[in-house]
Length: 442
Image (cartoon, rainbow, N blue to C red; front, side, top):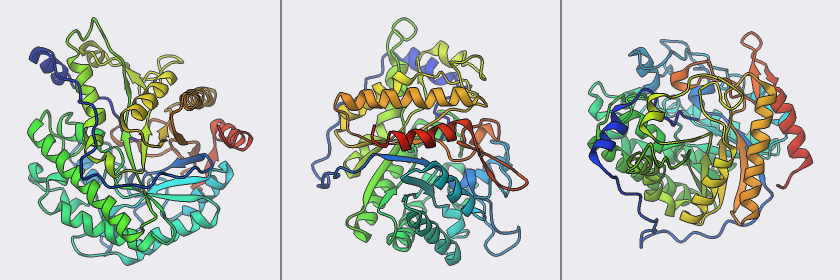
């Protein structure tokens, strides 16, 4: 998951308010050249969960070894932009069997995990074939355990050789990125397509772009670089489309699922009189999605909270778990927002939807259970009104590194024992396991 708010960033809403009204996003219309996709057949409801390589995987190689690697996030942490993650994370690379045991305990039908591009290609053109084979084996083991593996091809991180010293040419704006990306996607899909039929080209690109080129909060750390932001979004969308094409060329029956961070932005009539901030946040939700939605068989919704997009709300952002209605990150718990987002996505794109992330940073087991129970109820409400929701994935399998918030927030269904590397079931894991066995079809 990613921190979809814009913390400590006041200049954007203030400038927008001074600039006057920003137009709302236009209604979505697929391009004339949109691919013709077969309808997604009805299947049993997907109960799943997810992890991300940088948040979970240990490095697996000692510093100085041939295959030791770093990502842009490692470099960004070295620059002081984020807390250091270290080389061990929660050992999902070396101890994948422990993740697999936790998944079996839950009884989920689907598991989404990512491939770390930097692990496979630590230096440009040098391919770690053993790492690629291990990702292939991970997918095989998930399927052998009776679950559908879903692979995320990009979950926020780039190899550090794409994180240029000249940050104006970093990551999505590196001149080599698109060709290198296509080669990486092709090798990963070729290797895994025997066991994987669902691929996610990018996880939450809209949030990563906003925080990296507008919010100065994620790599490459730019504040309000609007021109570069738009260029990066165009490249990012082109890369998404490249990945979708490669997936279908390699496995014609494969399904492409895009995933976006989609908070529910409530209108603030008196605090945002021109609706400038509201429209800005709607653009954040939809601009990238509009560029690629026609290539998607499924739209993944990552929903955590609702928020009033007003200048005052950005200035006085709550911090911490102040009361029962807030998470450790100060996010307001608003289950009805999920219903509204599902309705909006259904009405705008008319495609099957999976709730690919929904979770709470908290140390309270009962609060976590209430959060999941109430959000699933809102999912069912949307289904009862005709929204084609195909699955629900709590974020995340095990407590892990939470980007610029480090190791503080606890989102895992399982806690992590740093001595034994065991996954320890939380009250919400126990509840979720019993719930999906009792109610397999919402």
